[in-house]
Amino acid sequence: MRTRARTSRTFTISFPPDLAEQVERLAARESRTTSELFREAFRTYRAEQIQKAFEELQALAEARGPSEYGPEDVERLVDEDRAEQWALRQAAKQ
Image (tube, rainbow, N blue to C red; front, side, top):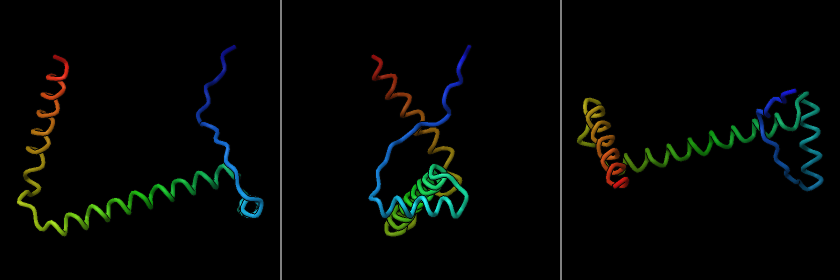
């Protein structure tokens, strides 16, 4: 008989008793599992980190001033970068 592969991984985490009680009460109040709460918490944390990184990059771009590149340059720049990356990979193979 074949067994199905797990579609998730298990993590073991520890909390101080008072925080663990808060987690359990919240899960019960919302009729959710602790796993659901932690998945949502991680997704929220990750989204906040991405937003923060975006805002930092945006501030750097604004501080640098306007670019001489426009939307019409994007495809050409991508093609140039891909060609450069390909050339570097080919050189590394030799």
